[in-house]
Each structure stands twice: as structure tokens, then as C-alpha cells.
Amino acid sequence: MKVWFLTGNEGKVREAKKIFNHYNFELEQMNLEFLEPQVDTLEEVAKEKMKQAMAFLPEESDALFVEDAGLFIEALNDFPGVFSSYALKTIGCQGIIRLLQHLHSEDLSADSRLRKARFEAVSGIYFKGRMEFFTGICPGKISHEASGEDGFGFDPIFIPSDLDIDGNPTQTGGIGVTSTHGETFGQISSDAKELFSHRAKAVNKAISWLKNQREHHK
Image (tube, rainbow, N blue to C red; front, side):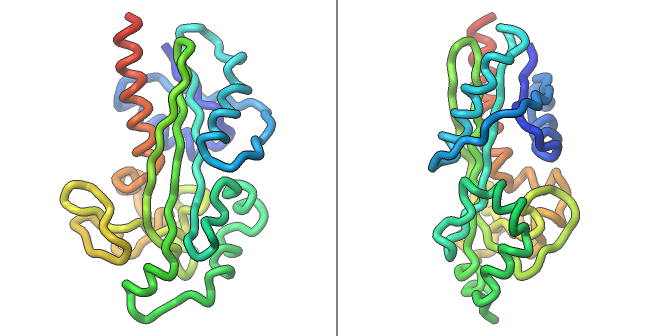
């Protein structure tokens, strides 16, 4: 079986393919023109994309994978959120930096709280008539300037929270055993990003479900 990933974003494909390959799933890109859903949550966006793409699944034995993610900034009432793709195209990383330029503190913990943000991702899988959705969250903060050329989207302005010994995020501004040491997602390697990534968390949950379904349908 193949897993078809509905997206035009090459960065998303690279990240997802790495995870799917680890579990011996063959991931291929499905790049279709579709109507961008105007809804209120990431899961609703993913669900509407799924519905539009189901008819184009090449083989009945294949699976369809969709994903939607957003950057939610506490000081901006969770903007850009579900409108992250539009915000990236219009105001970009520098626009977000300007919106938060009045929020800063010499105290690192206070600065982290003022610029608190999170990445959220929803991964959806359609297989054998069933549709399931899974969520991943990465808390962190917005940097004071864009840094790094790796990653994509808002990666150059997002610094993830440290992780504790169990791999769970620390409280905002807390010190953990795994850290980017103030570097953004745009500055660290893809392997390092995967430790923190909202997308990796959601994708791993989706793959776990798909593995069970594949065994069930053998």
C-alpha cells in the first residue's frame, strides 16, 4: 500500500516522509488544486481537505494523509492560528515580529511569557472507509528576530520550550534536559526539530493508528 499526502508544501513532505519511512510506509505526494476551507479549527480544515481528495485516491488499498498546522500566539489572541498560511503569504515572519515588537523583557522568563506561542498540527488518515484525526502541540515563544534558513513557514521565528527527562515540554521559560539553547526551528537540524515538533507528534499518532489498521486488514 501507499500513503498519499495531500499537500503542495515540499517542506511538509520531507518531514513526513522521513517519519513514515521509519515505519516502512511508502509516502507519495498528492498535489491537487482544492478550495481552501474557511473554518474555525485545524481539524475542520483537515477534514474538509480530506473530503475533497478522497475521490482521487489511486487504489482502494492505499491510504490518504492530510495535515494542517498553525502558529498560535497568546498575545495576539491566538492569531494567526488557522489563518497561518495566509498570514505567512501576506505579512510573513517579519510582520509577526513587528506585531510583537512592544513585548520584551530583560528577564528571560518574563520575556518568554510575554511572547508565548505554540505550534499545533492535526494529521488525518483515511483508510478503508475510516477517517481519523490526531493532534500534536509544541509550546514555545516568538523570537525577537528571524534566524535560520532551515525548515519552512514560521520556523525562523519560533523557539520551542525545553523538554524534560521524559521528553515533555517544560513550563514556559523553564530549563529542561533537551534544549535548542535559544535557537529557532529555522536554525536547528531536522533531526533535532523532530524531538520537539508538533508535526512529528501528530504524524506518529496517525502512523500508529494506520499500522493497527493495516494489520487488521491483512
